[in-house]
Image (cartoon, rainbow, N blue to C red; front, side):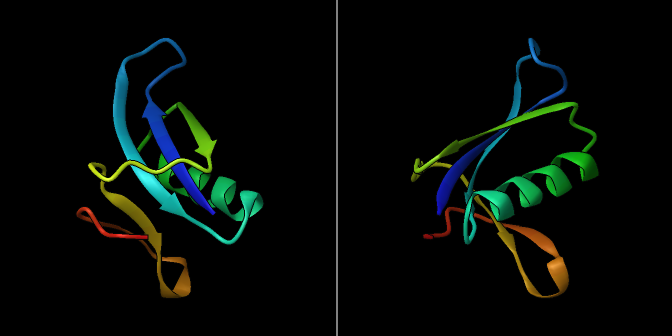
Length: 75
């Protein structure tokens, strides 16, 4: 499932980062988003399911649940 992840410091704060995210379903996408937001000290994040932006980088969960960002990687 393709999704757009938007990270913010707080709900009304400006956007810090927007990434494409690929997951096997909505639960996995939410789990990956929560891990990444927590590791980057973001207080608010949101997912928009079934959307993709060719200009944004892609957040990928690799082996052993390691998260990495690929520059303009195709999903």
